Image (cartoon, rainbow, N blue to C red; front, side):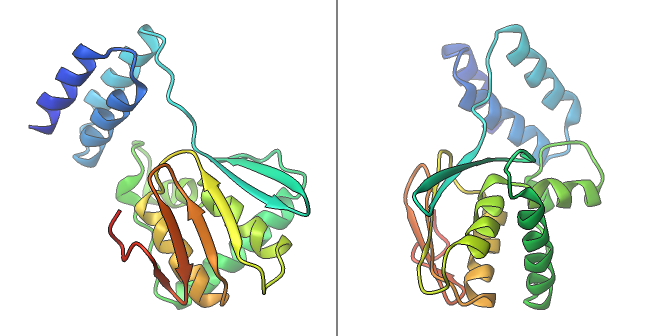
Length: 186
């Protein structure tokens, strides 16, 4: 049914990037990589471009933007080191990456790497090294936060004893002591 609805939505609104991404994600969740490629080819043919995920964080009067996989930030080495520290602490907390959300036909290790370079994780790592511990880390996200990032931010709030607020496309998420104000329903 999801496939039928997705195809109908694309038929009705061929320029809407979200409908293409939704259908592509449905196919990827089932491992149907041929159809994922078909959707991506269709997007390219029609000039439909997916809006990239972007997270913003204000620190010391400067707004910092992060995109998934972005390596251009002047503090990228510090950010990557903090991500390594975060990964080690989250492993102790029992975290395992939710690689089923990665809609690429790559091996598990590459999926884990792709997940850990999501814009919100980069922003959280930057916040941990830049924002004083008594001040909440506040992040604005242009899209909906994925479930893996949501889990990571919850665990970071517990492991680092930090308050973190993420405003995604739909709502505010207030993370504190390993839980979120949305109660994992978003």
